[in-house]
Image (cartoon, rainbow, N blue to C red; front, side, top):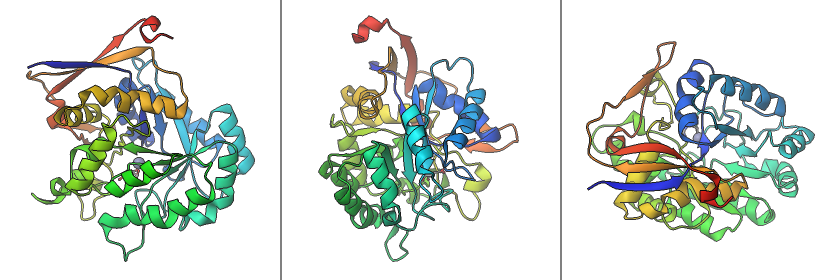
Length: 358
Ligand code: NCD
Ligand code: ZN
């Protein structure tokens, strides 16, 4: 049976576009499919100022394919001691800086410039609360005594909960929420939203570990238990406004994924939406896809609603699907989600503004 659903054009509220030849190889996947994309600042060196955002934006826009006419990147800067508060205020006021991203040092790819404690940044967070600048948080403890599968819950209770209690006006996004504890935390904090990734919605740690170790599924925070996945899917399909799609698409060359130590990150920009559609379909909640992938993020970020839609169709047809991309330098990146992409076709369907009543 063929099933179709039309949703407002979706956005990606957490993406790694990288730089140089990797940027050139990956940006089209995001720019052709999504309108807004919140671009993460974990380059080396990290993006920490309006000047660095401006030049990064130029490099991104120069790499966007011409047929991706309505791509609107937004930028987070990296939470660091070098942030100049006047520069941040200016950037937030003119829209060049959308948010500040806190990385615990050592938790993930390119996090060496991150913090050892959120409490060291309270004066910055106060300015952000006053100026209504959203804080994005990679919520993962780096305490070696804490089990890797418990590190999100530990970080939330030990670090983010006290920050939220001290600064109740601060708007926060728990990025790539990965556990039922994370979902509970967001539900208990009215100023907290969360992004959820396609891979955390559609895979659990048995996919990662049970039938041979899968570096392509290795990311931070690590994909967790079946119970956690069920909680994420329930949250994403609930219609609650605080949950939105953030792919956390994070390309790494196969040389960095399949060596003795795999780098963290799943590249899902190509097929992430198909993966989410299939997860919603399997949950019997396809009707909630537009809320999660399109409407919630637009409301949370107060950006202009889209004037076009896309149509996703689930049908069995033969298709030639790419399983990897190759950069101009010759690096190969594995595409996540080919199983789901084999089931779904996505079409852009421009509509008149009147359809959305705007
Ligand atoms: C991201 C990357 O590769 O930049 N990796 C990941 O596993 N998610 C960084 C991040 O968002 O943690
Ligand atoms: Zn990320």
